[in-house]
Image (cartoon, rainbow, N blue to C red; front, side, top):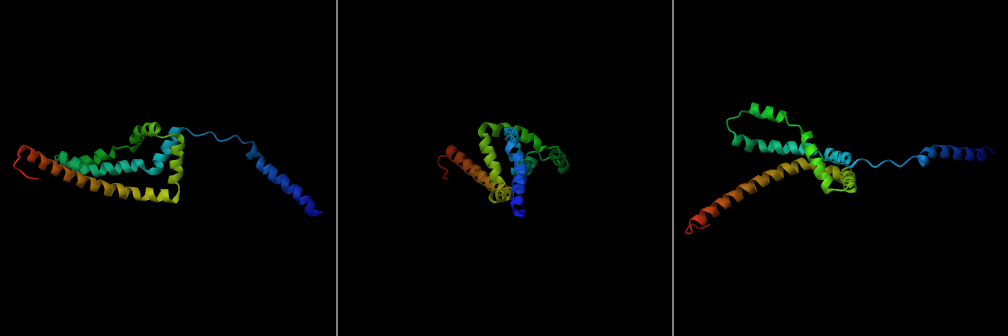
Length: 156
């Protein structure tokens, strides 16, 4: 007898617990801009932008040799990565759909996505160094070819 009363009571408890879920309105899709901002935050794009700027400081120091480290420290202290985010959000909005943005967010929350994000600063740093060396070699080659074009007797 006690068992026969327990089943209806359990059923009633489950029905009451599920009622808010069954009657709940589906969640409104979030604004595309909000999703893009989450993606940019998740991927650390502002930090990567700052890292790129820090890598550019040496060429900038060479271009403006009269400026001391205090100048550059003050200059970079004023850099606000939120400004970059404001400029980039419309670019993402033009190139990606809401579903693509949401898919990217979901991916970057997976273990593989988190691993990629963790390694990205090192990848960017190493890639920039490689790119700088590649560009230097291309510049040297271009200079050689210019000299050869001016002097047909000059061999490459």
